[in-house]
Image (cartoon, rainbow, N blue to C red; front, side, top):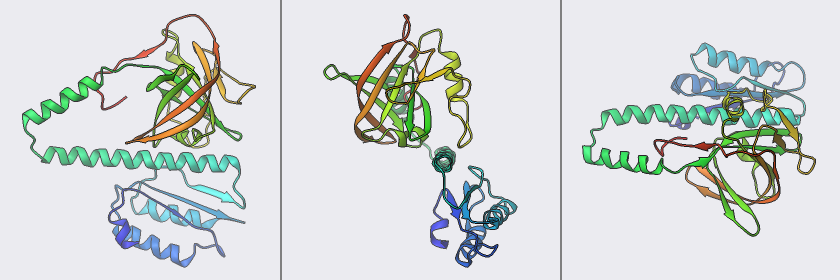
Amino acid sequence: VEALITRTDGFCLGAPTLGGHMPTPVSNALGVIVKEASRETPSGVFGSFGWSGEAVDMMESKLKNSGFTFAFDAIRCKFKPTQETLQVCEESGTDLAQAVKKLRKKKAAAAQKEIATSSAAAAGASDTAAAVGRIVGSLCAVTARAGETQSAMLASWVSQASFNPPAITVAVAKERAVESFLLKGSTFNLNVLQAGNEKEVIKALLKPFAPGENRFGDMDVEISERNGCAVVTQALSCLECEVTQRMECGDHWVVLATVREGTLLRDGQTSIHHRKVGTSY
């Protein structure tokens, strides 16, 4: 534990409750973490129990009093986890990954300030980012379902990939919660947003949400009878898709999906996302 914690950018600590306490190995590991880990390191705690669950409270209190910050609220599971509990775990893991990514960006920015780079190299990097940023994309709402759990995200890296059969590709960042809903064989809906009628949907999808919270918020949606995924009623069109392939591409997954059904919900123009640089959305 001592060797690992000094080179990690984030951690989770979990334990069952045994006789009102956390197990000795967990208590020992917690002591090492408090002694050796940087207080900048995002953390989280979770645990299962049958009666009172004191171990989770003990871990949370120890870390909090020692100055650590939590990437998500403590997760407590009594007896067997439900589908809702598993969704909370999935989304909490995503929150931790995003906190780690934010910390790494902070460290990278600090390091760049200490390293002098030539003006030519800097100009070249800037030109490349600006050039890539001129690629535009359709603004879409991806809605997906796994069991009884629904998820959604705003997407702009979307493209048609085939005429026959009709197919599309969607690029999904690896830390996005919806990524685990888009495995091979899964179904999802691609809701193409309408120019001039997209602001409410974008606002709802970009709003931070707690693990387990209703992802659709104030969005007006209907559930498709064919695949059980949400249809955004304000969208221009809706494509019901099935994932056929996935390809790992750096910090994203590119999902190839066959369009099984398509519905034009209204007339209008597609909402287009314009960027200035290719280093962010």
